[in-house]
Length: 328
Image (cartoon, rainbow, N blue to C red; front, side):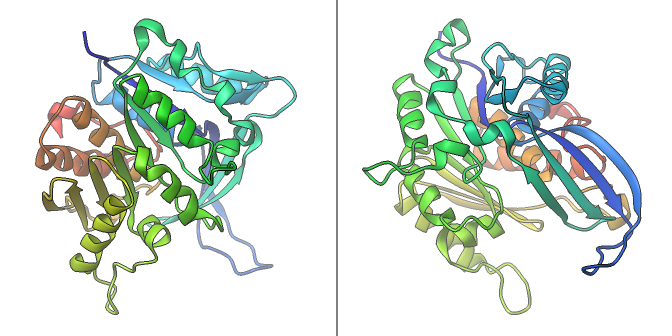
């Protein structure tokens, strides 16, 4: 029987989200209207969303936690969402990671992240060759540039992540890489190093510009489709094996290595319906991974991904609370 399921590697953290009345100037005060606690990071969000979408295959979490209350919160969340936790590495002297998320109503969020145990993420803590009967079809990585020691370069000018990606290919897995918008000075170099071992690359417009130095919005702040296509083709030339999936608030673009290219429109949502923008990209990603796992054609995958992103926008959670994939 071919491999089935998803193993998710990367940052695991407790999310503490604050809804604020206004983003304050330096030295000024803002009011917190609401506080929401949850579990976040790409792997948690993607696997949790897969569970809600009705993905009935093994969902395995891999990463580094501390030996503390936040680790217990993460494991409890995983158990609730049918995520296998047997392969986590617990580091006794390091705190589990957490993130503070700040957002005004209906606006983009800002993150303050404490890396903690995630900073120690390394090959020795990621036993993808020891999963046995749970050996999956897809390895999801989230997020490059926040992967601790995996982001470090070795003497051959490749990141340590490359070793893991080569190993997963040897085990017959597909590698799906997910990016994050941050200001890491080696962002482009870290991403480029991994691309020859990446089957599917998922990224948003900010990450696309950071990775390629190509702007995809014009002077009117509209998506320039020609520029966006140039970004995708640039990333394929740098090594992506199967497809680049670029998502923006207005559109999604799928470009594969066979020359096939398709644009799809996002599903409209009223501004008043948006409860939070946190996790929309991860919901989009989860639906894409579901479709890739099931070998769906790209138009169907993007349609479901738009539906998942829209659903999460209508909740205050960074994951879950979205319908079964058949209802999207």
